[in-house]
Length: 224
Image (cartoon, rainbow, N blue to C red):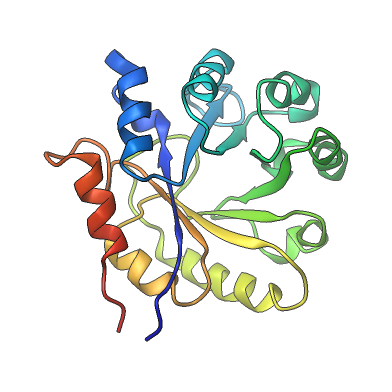
């Protein structure tokens, strides 16, 4: 099989916050492609995660792209706070269910010079977001319920990837995996057309190996 290229992004809510600067620099030097920033408001999901100040800190420490995943109610109300803290070309994902008029929020993201994306929950069908697939450039598929790290993969989500890959032939967007991302999932789904994978506690953080070794091992995996 030909060489398969895919992106790796670090889920920074799983990082060691005793020394966030060192975490960012180590991951950057180890070859991570981007940094995934989970913003939670305790309302859309029953958890609080990273803050606007965390985002600003990480943005100041790396030239790599940031992928900002807004798990908040009515993101249009605060979207300017986040886009002003980012660089042009960074990605902002919203959850369509969290907004009355998600296309308005996506347009605001586009006008700010960011890459517009939607995150699809396990219980959300592709059919329900099909119109938005024509205007976004990235689709983040949640293979676990949003809000917490360390969850188990939900097998029924597998069919959603098949639907999105088929839909991708009609329009232009990239598919990304978020949640319980193990090496076998990359092996299975990268060849099918999933462009990137968010790495958390399953594969990257909390291990007894340096980030450089883990990332190198992932990139050197042999596909059948």
